[in-house]
Amino acid sequence: TNTRLALCERGAQGFEIVSNDKFPSADFESLGAIVEKFLGDKASSVTRACFGVAGPISGETAKLSNVVWTVDAGEVRRIIGGGRVALINDL
Image 1: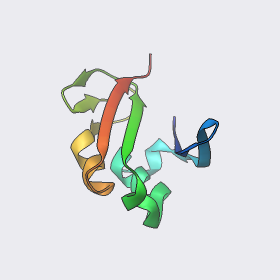
Image 2 (image 1 turned 90 degrees about the vertical axis):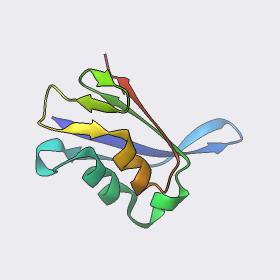
Image 3 (image 1 turned 120 degrees about the vertical axis):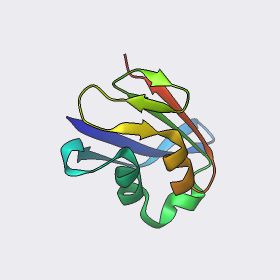
Image 4 (image 1 turned 180 degrees about the horizontal axis):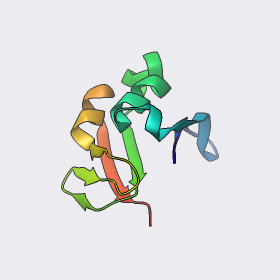
């Protein structure tokens, strides 16, 4: 399975995709590792992030059903420098 990420900015016509990419999930140890690779030096410019995940969410963590990760919103929040991070079920 893959992880697809997009970086968006609010423009005059609504949100516009600035960049997007797809990563083989099995090649990474966590969602945080993918976010770091995707954002590179742009991480501090992110003020909000939302991730649709395949698995049940409890508080700020989700145990995924298709990879052996536990997604932690706090980990991603640290990577982006403290912005808001939400997890939603991708169903």
